[in-house]
Length: 416
Image (cartoon, rainbow, N blue to C red):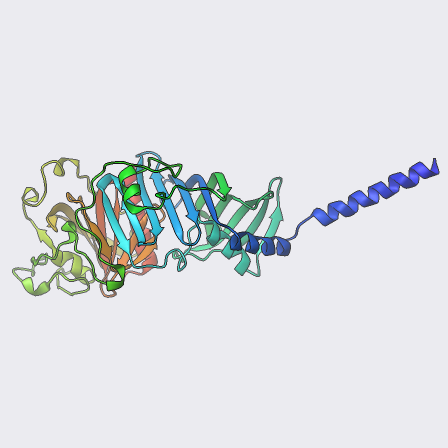
């Protein structure tokens, strides 16, 4: 009887010892995460991203592909409108594709090394590894890290990351502002390491032709037309002018614009509007836009009936709407909204009728629902495209953070 008691005690002790050895703490997981990323060849993930940056949450399907050493494909799809934009990195550079428009924007960028994305595994692991003040918890099926957030949007302060206990695959991410309010949420439906992709999975033309088809990475042989013009070599640093942003010398708007054609059309060039409310920060956009022209003169007949103007629902404190003017910008009918007060800026919205490949001289910026580009300094212009529309937000005094908020509020309004 004593022998049985001793055996039971020994078994219990061994069980407790093994259990304690199997428990992982934050430091040991961090070391293993570093090894996982270092030895990772590829991955494929999909899920849902929800933005809580407006009055109503916006939901997007997100699909992420990665293949060593530097190939990325991110597809963001508006679940309601079935609109997809693709961010692509391959040997030729970094591209933002809008298959619906057969449109390509090319960036001279080392993305995503110079900026992180909430749905990229490398970004999540890096934030965990670099934050020495990380907080750690364990739930039923995941390890949970609460760490500092490091994104372009400075209002995002912290993030919680759920990693699967078995293979450290991401399960959920919540990014919060300084008030602990969740602004961005990503829930992964699936995530697989060491995925085998087809050779054309990261090819620009294949993705442009196929749109969201061939989502499994298989070779898509769509016969979609090539972009009208080829993007120049990114190393040249020169911009290929697209049909909708062609450099036309036109008069700046406003009571004092008159025939003052010397306003020019190059980005960053100043032109006075003469408005008492003051919109001096948006000269570049205003100087490129023809005011009061017949939209039909510069737009195809099948574009105008579909055009629906969108206004930002967010205004910085001390800013008011001055006016909205019908314009022709780069040969495309559109509308220009002008704002003044604490900040002065213009928002131009057009519906490009042509397709083109263009090199974007600015740098990429994450707007959440798509990627945009920022160029110039004074004034500074944020450009993005969505659902067949092109938007240009121009100002000399808006901060980058405020520009992002305005852009996101335009999308919130357009999605209703």
